[in-house]
Image (tube, rainbow, N blue to C red; front, side):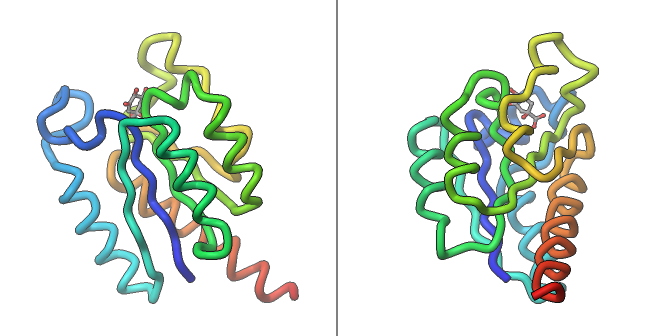
Length: 149
Ligand code: DQA
């Protein structure tokens, strides 16, 4: 099983960026923790971060045939992008949306997610744990699909 983790704009600045909201751990810390978590479970993982909507759309399209599922934190594009959920739908791949902070207890404009409609689950406010929970959700989903075949 191979999963793609996509992190959107400004998440390259984790650790520096508003640490009172996002914590003081970096994107490299997240990737290291997640790689360990996946290795223990026999899951292959690849990471992608971009500050550009089009680059994220390209990466989602390229995932077709290469990955079994996508974990995505679209960051600010969550609340504005139609192209990202359209790309997820186009691939037909199961995707889980993750947010480090709880988007439902922050500014009202963060409560709208266009991405969540295209995803099988959304995890918000669980920091790094949320990404691990997303791995579990995708593993269970893909395992049950294989069993049903
Ligand atoms: C975020 C929440 C978004 O509202 C924000 O724009 C981000 C990060 C999160 O992980 O909590 O950049 O997706």
